[in-house]
Length: 85
Image (tube, rainbow, N blue to C red; front, side):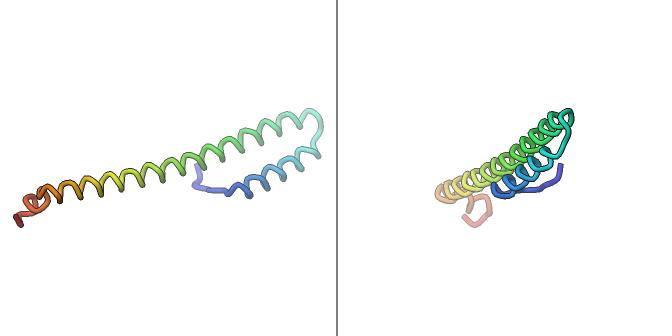
C-alpha cells in the first residue's frame, strides 16, 4: 500500500468529491460506488491511525532506551562496560 498520509481536511474533500461523483450515477451503480467509497475511506483512516501508532511506539522505545542508559550510567555499568572504570 502507498505511504500516503492525508489530513482530515483532505479526507473530507475526497469524500465530498466521491459524493458528487456518486450523484451522477445510475441507481444500480450508486450502491456499488457508495460501498467502494466507504472501503476507500476506511483504508485511508486505518493507514492514518497505523502511522500514528507507529510514531507513538517509536517515541516510547526512545524514552525507554534513554531511561535504561541513564540507569545503567548511574549504576556505573556503562563505564565498566566501556573499560573506563
